[in-house]
Image (cartoon, rainbow, N blue to C red; front, side, top):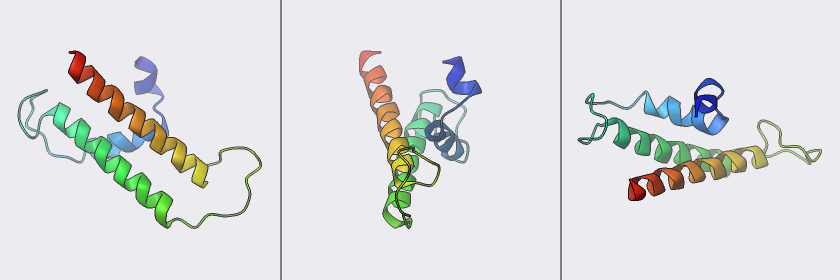
Length: 96
């Protein structure tokens, strides 16, 4: 968990960029502007952003079997991580 804070992945960085722009009411879990609600909305915003990046970005030629910044595969990998984070969040709420 501490690793996610001190060395966030590109997907978590994107979530954080949206999260801190959304308004809040100071509550962790109550109301439309709570921290929990903002986090879910930040994930949704990040997914929309990545989908648009994948849809409109011009893709170059072959990549030498590596996922490089700016490649389609790089953005698809970020999208997969965002979906996993979203699913983990939903599972944690149904269990807890």
